[in-house]
Image (cartoon, rainbow, N blue to C red; front, side, top):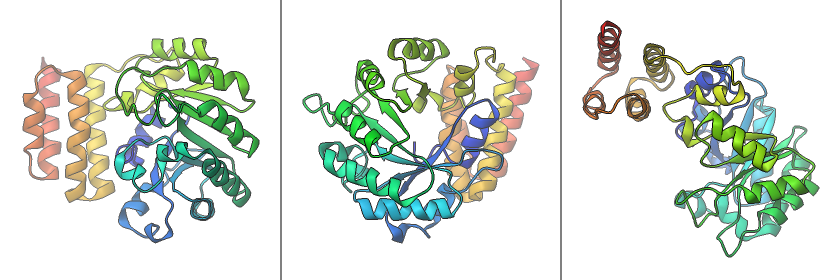
Length: 302
């Protein structure tokens, strides 16, 4: 979810009832700390606590040092990513690549827990491949090293996002651990969230891709009394979100980031791809906001 769950998106998810939000994934290497990308990814959203920061790295010293820096910067929870399947992350011996080496994963968590006075949590997959599904063993080892919670995506690294996520492994991990366990993968509706919780006994669910174009979804999963926003309410969310992205990133980058989010929103709300193409063709931030206002007025009149 790097490049997606930025400060404007987290603010919306929190506003609509998400119980917990985590920063975009940040590289652990020290030379990345002062880059523009890292600076924006570690921006805190006022009013959201605990402040959780996710780190990816391939060796214990760099991850532990990054954790110390983030805690000094205000992080209240450190989350270590052993789950990302992206090739550019795995090529750097980080993310789910590390599941091939349980000893290294254990060393990273041990060093990080010793380095910071805040909870250290872990995001992981069920293993490297179907022939190396070692998440149960790894999760238990990480608990013994002090991990405060584990979130498990129900696919291996080799699976990527293909096929359906399986949650039997999550259930087995939950049965063996004392710390909270969260289920992740192919949980798209409140009904599916309830079913996965009942099936696995997990303490909660973690939502990623299902929230694209629907920042209200985690809140609806957390509270069954929350209703789906109306079409016009959703349109107002889009306009507010686009404005927030312009302000957060500046007009140039904000223009580009807004396009992908609006595409996700409209794909959920409309069957017609033409509005997406029309929005993507707009060349400046004021034009994006004007287009949304005009389309919103038309929708209200209809």
